[in-house]
Amino acid sequence: MTKIMLIDDSRLARVELKAQLAELGEQDIVAEAADVADALEKIERLQPELIFLDINMPDGSGFDLLAQLDYVPSVIFVTAYDEFALQSFEVNALDYLLKPVTNERIKAALEKYQQKAAKPLSLCSKFFIKDANKCFFIALDEVFAFEAMGNYTQIHLSSNKVSVYRTMSHIESRLPSDDFFRAGRSWIINVNQIKTVELEVGGSLEVTLNNQIKVLLSRKQTALFKQKWRL
Image (cartoon, rainbow, N blue to C red; front, side):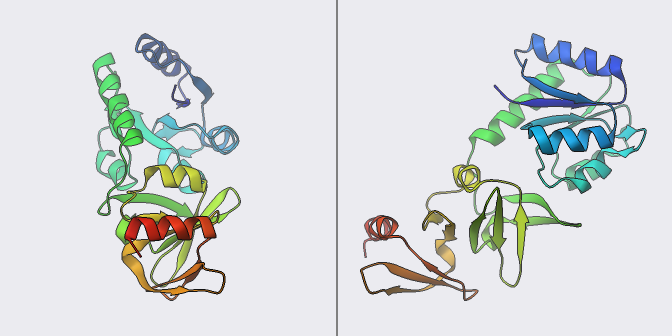
């Protein structure tokens, strides 16, 4: 069941939304928050998969919250104001629901989330991440490699790199397997960006990408790489 968090300064709005979600079978509400500061702490600590987010709150907006997050869950905006709809999709929101919200609209928004969660990305897919004080909207085909850095993953682009608060396993589950290859515990490479492949002493392969990054494949992954691409 999806881990959901409700963020709205109106307690009544949270109660109503919680009841609607329960009617639709979504009962794993891991947290609620009434302001940006409380929401920020709970999202970073609990890491919900999906948040229902209001726009206007006492200490800032929903957009202010998203700009401060290291871990960014999927977002469905729920608000009484229609003028922020375009801005919501600029931050890659799944949906924008206007109050009062019907069960049918909530169900449709949840279906969008389920489709996104189940469907692998394609090379033309774009994704939104925040790294330090900057936000990026990146196309998957711009990625040369993913590198594990603890609970973070570093995304290597043509001339720079950014970090996202996601594990490698989570990222790998969303990637198209014909285009990305798990080179070892710490690396996933974009095979379309491979420049050269060299055989090393001991039988492992070293891959050089077009941005000059060199990645040594583990022995197990070398065998899988050869099998998949018939080397």
